[in-house]
Length: 386
Image 1 (tube, rainbow, N blue to C red):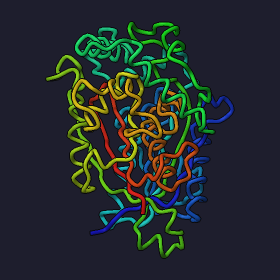
Image 2: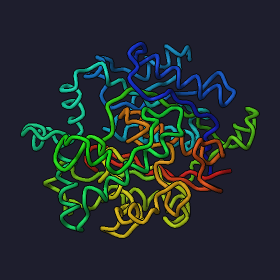
Image 3: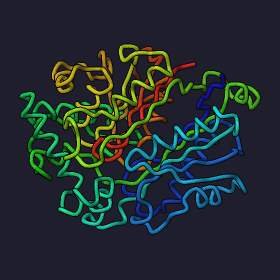
């Protein structure tokens, strides 16, 4: 059976890039990844992106990026799975390599969000929700996650302070990441004193609107050898899983179970031949602090209702049993939505190469989990050090 390895990784700093366009960011990340791999050609390109049409009036992204990067007449396509577009694009690139149809694939995740008015950005992000049953009634994406957070706290007896610990951990790790949007540690008091954006969600419970791009190069071990890529740069894509749940929260069997994440994780673990206890670090989708807690439960790192307990016990720190958000996560690194899953992949690659600015000790297996919507479209990828 063919295997897929990542041989190159690159990213731009996350932030408000007023002087760079979407194509500038995408090509910068892509060329950085190609340079890291030591190559000047790829067979195809997959672009992960959620809402380039509304944000910057640009679709046909695959062709745009490949053309702007001077890659010639290769196949290139945009992959959209709401906020999980980046993770989905990585999976499509891996599948292309595993199928034998393509040998060297580039994946780019990119989003340019800050050119829009905040009110418009809120509306565009809500496109990931159910347009008829949620958006039509005025429920923003932040409001939907606030409902989940309130129910989680009420059901399991947690406080706003308990969930704030996820943000504190993310900022502690992001402070060491030169590519992060926020490079300053915070305290629990910082989170608790920040204004409510949708009670009980506060400003520091939520990830920022921002711009950024990340890229990886995927191939087979055989092709990597042929290209002369040093083996210490290889990171194996050991397992992948993807699943959906109902788009509207009102249709869920259980509001506090990320069923799509649970199913996706089971598929990824089976493909990789591992269990949750084998994972050395988790890059989970903490667009909101409550989603970090629910994700840890769905991935099998914590029992149902005990995701926030891991944070209270200090188990999510970089040197603890369940390290998460090792380079800041969505909260501190930033969440350029369609690019996030690729940023997570790049960060996993750096951890497994031993090149991360905040290194997990002796990391051999890492996991990324990318959520689209309020848990409606989720990818889970497992990576292994070669």
